[in-house]
Image 1 (cartoon, rainbow, N blue to C red):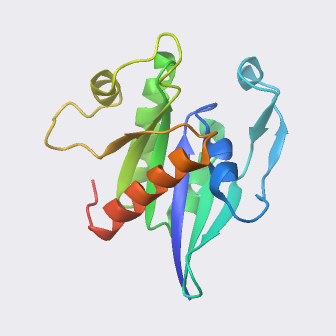
Image 2: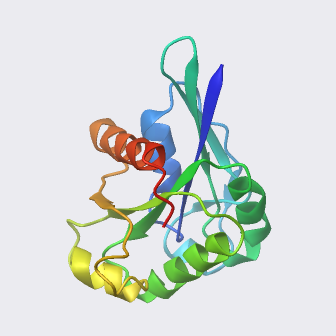
Image 3: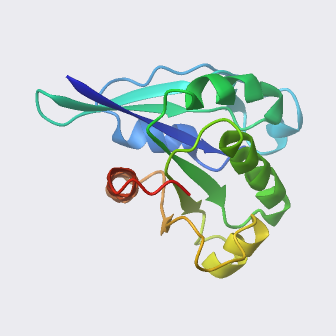
Length: 179
Protein backbone atom coordinates (compact mmCIF):
# COMPACT_ATOMS: atom_id res chain seq x y z
CA UNK A 1 0.00 0.00 0.00
CA UNK A 2 1.22 3.47 -0.90
CA UNK A 3 0.93 5.98 1.96
CA UNK A 4 1.36 9.71 1.43
CA UNK A 5 2.12 11.66 4.60
CA UNK A 6 0.74 15.20 4.60
CA UNK A 7 1.42 17.68 7.38
CA UNK A 8 -1.08 20.35 8.38
CA UNK A 9 0.78 23.10 10.20
CA UNK A 10 0.29 26.73 11.08
CA UNK A 11 -0.21 29.13 13.92
CA UNK A 12 -2.50 28.68 16.91
CA UNK A 13 -6.16 28.84 15.95
CA UNK A 14 -5.59 28.72 12.19
CA UNK A 15 -7.82 25.62 11.89
CA UNK A 16 -5.40 22.67 11.78
CA UNK A 17 -7.37 20.25 13.98
CA UNK A 18 -10.68 21.26 12.41
CA UNK A 19 -9.17 20.80 8.94
CA UNK A 20 -8.21 17.21 9.72
CA UNK A 21 -11.53 16.44 11.45
CA UNK A 22 -13.44 17.72 8.42
CA UNK A 23 -11.91 15.23 6.02
CA UNK A 24 -10.68 12.21 7.97
CA UNK A 25 -12.61 9.03 7.39
CA UNK A 26 -11.55 7.71 10.78
CA UNK A 27 -12.08 9.24 14.18
CA UNK A 28 -9.21 11.67 14.54
CA UNK A 29 -6.52 10.79 17.05
CA UNK A 30 -5.70 13.97 18.90
CA UNK A 31 -3.68 15.23 21.83
CA UNK A 32 -5.84 18.18 22.72
CA UNK A 33 -5.67 19.51 26.24
CA UNK A 34 -6.96 22.57 28.07
CA UNK A 35 -5.15 25.71 26.97
CA UNK A 36 -3.38 27.37 29.89
CA UNK A 37 -1.24 30.07 28.29
CA UNK A 38 -2.08 32.97 25.95
CA UNK A 39 -3.70 30.37 23.68
CA UNK A 40 -6.63 30.33 26.11
CA UNK A 41 -7.53 33.80 24.82
CA UNK A 42 -8.29 32.22 21.42
CA UNK A 43 -9.68 28.81 22.33
CA UNK A 44 -10.30 26.47 25.26
CA UNK A 45 -8.37 23.44 23.97
CA UNK A 46 -5.12 23.14 22.05
CA UNK A 47 -3.02 20.44 20.40
CA UNK A 48 0.14 19.57 22.33
CA UNK A 49 1.63 16.77 20.20
CA UNK A 50 -0.29 16.03 16.99
CA UNK A 51 -3.58 15.17 15.34
CA UNK A 52 -3.88 12.18 13.03
CA UNK A 53 -6.47 11.44 10.38
CA UNK A 54 -6.65 9.20 7.34
CA UNK A 55 -8.23 9.32 3.93
CA UNK A 56 -8.27 6.12 1.84
CA UNK A 57 -8.14 6.30 -1.96
CA UNK A 58 -8.90 2.75 -2.99
CA UNK A 59 -7.12 -0.38 -1.79
CA UNK A 60 -3.61 0.80 -2.67
CA UNK A 61 -3.43 4.48 -1.69
CA UNK A 62 -4.01 6.33 1.57
CA UNK A 63 -3.31 9.82 2.82
CA UNK A 64 -2.15 10.16 6.40
CA UNK A 65 -2.80 13.65 7.74
CA UNK A 66 -0.75 14.87 10.69
CA UNK A 67 -1.60 18.15 12.38
CA UNK A 68 1.10 19.95 14.33
CA UNK A 69 0.74 22.07 17.45
CA UNK A 70 0.74 25.79 16.73
CA UNK A 71 2.89 26.94 19.66
CA UNK A 72 6.62 27.18 19.01
CA UNK A 73 7.38 25.56 22.37
CA UNK A 74 6.23 22.32 20.74
CA UNK A 75 8.56 22.72 17.77
CA UNK A 76 10.16 19.37 18.59
CA UNK A 77 6.92 17.85 17.29
CA UNK A 78 7.19 19.90 14.09
CA UNK A 79 10.65 18.38 13.67
CA UNK A 80 9.45 14.82 14.25
CA UNK A 81 6.39 15.09 12.02
CA UNK A 82 7.99 16.86 9.06
CA UNK A 83 10.92 14.43 8.69
CA UNK A 84 8.92 11.78 6.79
CA UNK A 85 6.39 14.10 5.16
CA UNK A 86 5.75 14.15 1.44
CA UNK A 87 4.24 17.66 1.56
CA UNK A 88 2.67 20.16 3.90
CA UNK A 89 0.07 22.88 4.04
CA UNK A 90 0.67 25.95 6.15
CA UNK A 91 -2.63 27.29 7.48
CA UNK A 92 -2.68 31.03 8.07
CA UNK A 93 -5.60 32.89 9.63
CA UNK A 94 -6.04 35.90 7.33
CA UNK A 95 -7.63 38.03 10.06
CA UNK A 96 -4.78 37.75 12.61
CA UNK A 97 -1.82 39.66 11.16
CA UNK A 98 0.00 39.63 14.50
CA UNK A 99 0.59 35.90 13.86
CA UNK A 100 2.06 36.21 10.36
CA UNK A 101 5.59 36.40 11.81
CA UNK A 102 4.96 33.09 13.60
CA UNK A 103 3.82 31.56 10.30
CA UNK A 104 7.06 32.74 8.70
CA UNK A 105 9.05 31.14 11.55
CA UNK A 106 7.25 27.82 11.02
CA UNK A 107 8.15 27.85 7.32
CA UNK A 108 11.77 28.72 8.09
CA UNK A 109 11.93 25.96 10.73
CA UNK A 110 10.64 23.36 8.28
CA UNK A 111 12.75 24.53 5.34
CA UNK A 112 15.89 24.19 7.47
CA UNK A 113 15.09 20.50 7.96
CA UNK A 114 13.48 19.25 4.76
CA UNK A 115 12.75 20.30 1.22
CA UNK A 116 9.22 19.12 0.50
CA UNK A 117 6.42 20.78 -1.47
CA UNK A 118 4.14 23.11 0.43
CA UNK A 119 1.11 25.25 -0.15
CA UNK A 120 -0.47 27.97 1.93
CA UNK A 121 -4.04 27.54 3.12
CA UNK A 122 -5.60 30.90 3.91
CA UNK A 123 -8.35 30.54 6.54
CA UNK A 124 -10.78 33.01 8.09
CA UNK A 125 -10.92 35.07 4.90
CA UNK A 126 -14.52 36.04 5.64
CA UNK A 127 -13.67 37.60 9.03
CA UNK A 128 -13.46 41.35 9.62
CA UNK A 129 -9.91 42.59 9.14
CA UNK A 130 -8.86 39.69 6.90
CA UNK A 131 -5.83 40.51 4.78
CA UNK A 132 -5.70 39.96 1.03
CA UNK A 133 -3.76 37.06 -0.48
CA UNK A 134 -1.06 39.42 -1.76
CA UNK A 135 -0.61 41.06 1.64
CA UNK A 136 -0.40 37.69 3.38
CA UNK A 137 2.22 36.47 0.90
CA UNK A 138 4.39 39.51 1.61
CA UNK A 139 3.83 39.39 5.37
CA UNK A 140 5.04 35.80 5.63
CA UNK A 141 8.08 36.45 3.46
CA UNK A 142 7.11 35.64 -0.11
CA UNK A 143 7.86 38.98 -1.75
CA UNK A 144 9.03 37.58 -5.10
CA UNK A 145 5.93 36.74 -7.14
CA UNK A 146 7.91 34.18 -9.14
CA UNK A 147 9.01 32.22 -6.08
CA UNK A 148 5.81 31.60 -4.16
CA UNK A 149 4.03 28.42 -3.16
CA UNK A 150 0.43 28.02 -4.29
CA UNK A 151 -2.15 29.62 -2.02
CA UNK A 152 -5.69 28.30 -1.56
CA UNK A 153 -8.50 29.78 0.45
CA UNK A 154 -9.90 27.11 2.75
CA UNK A 155 -12.67 26.90 5.30
CA UNK A 156 -11.55 24.16 7.73
CA UNK A 157 -15.15 23.55 8.84
CA UNK A 158 -16.32 22.59 5.35
CA UNK A 159 -15.41 19.15 4.01
CA UNK A 160 -15.56 20.25 0.36
CA UNK A 161 -13.26 23.19 0.98
CA UNK A 162 -10.75 20.99 2.85
CA UNK A 163 -10.97 18.35 0.09
CA UNK A 164 -10.09 20.98 -2.52
CA UNK A 165 -7.09 22.09 -0.44
CA UNK A 166 -5.90 18.49 -0.01
CA UNK A 167 -6.25 17.89 -3.75
CA UNK A 168 -4.23 21.04 -4.45
CA UNK A 169 -1.53 19.87 -2.02
CA UNK A 170 -1.36 16.38 -3.53
CA UNK A 171 -1.24 17.78 -7.08
CA UNK A 172 1.52 20.20 -6.10
CA UNK A 173 3.43 17.40 -4.42
CA UNK A 174 3.12 15.15 -7.45
CA UNK A 175 4.52 17.91 -9.66
CA UNK A 176 7.68 17.69 -7.55
CA UNK A 177 7.65 21.41 -6.84
CA UNK A 178 9.65 21.94 -3.67
CA UNK A 179 9.47 25.61 -2.74
